[in-house]
Length: 84
Image (tube, rainbow, N blue to C red; front, top):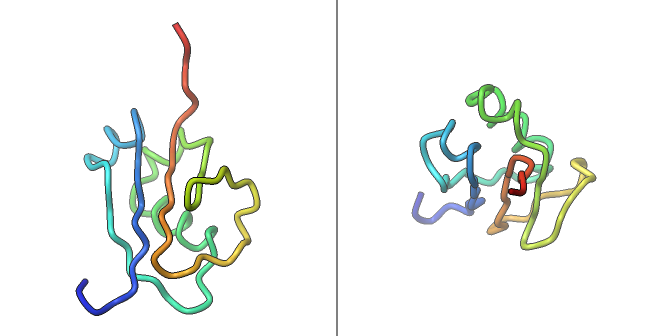
C-alpha cells in the first residue's frame, strides 16, 4: 500500500486469534468514519467481531463510532478482558 494513506488496525487477545493476525493495514477513503471501518471488518471477520467490545483510536477509548477516521490513524479492537 505504498503511496496510499492507510489505517493501521490492531487486534488483541481472542480477537486477534479469530482473525489470525494482530495487525492489518486498511486503505483510507475520504469521508471514512470509524463505523465504516468496523462494518467492513465485521463483514470479513464476523466470528471475531462478535466478541469485540472495546475500540480505541490513536490511543484513546472511543464509543462514538460515527466520528471521522483521519488517514494514518491507528485503531484497536479488543474483547472484554477477564481477570483472574
